[in-house]
Length: 157
Image (cartoon, rainbow, N blue to C red; front, side, top):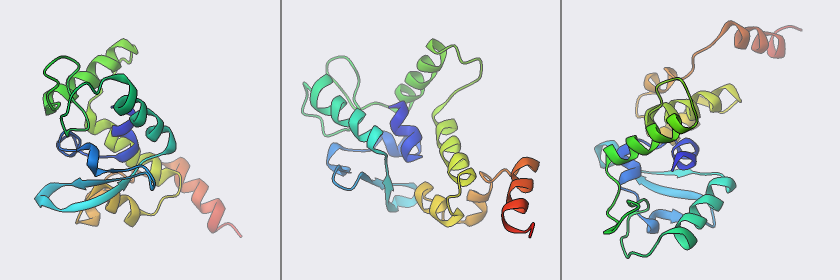
């Protein structure tokens, strides 16, 4: 779940509404219905695919629920928003992370790292499901270190 949240940058509401049938393992993509019932395709890594397949095929699917993520105990209901938040919080606590960790932080981190590593702002905007580019620009926190690097890469001739 943690890997999935980070890899896709999905909102909690989107994750809780994901179904197994929304996954495309051939293309490492997922069909997501976001805000305003807008459908989009998000990507995930090969690493995420391995975890997802293991989760779906081997670990727990003793149920017939169409949900991608379900509770650990019978009757294996679809995870709620609060359930996802608790799992993220508990994993952070067990990892001894001394910072508030919540699902949206993983979305924010995915977007910020993508931009820092050279992803196009429009691509990140699409992956996050933002209609307004200004919303995505919030994730483009430009540090002085990044400014100097970009200057030296592109303008210091």
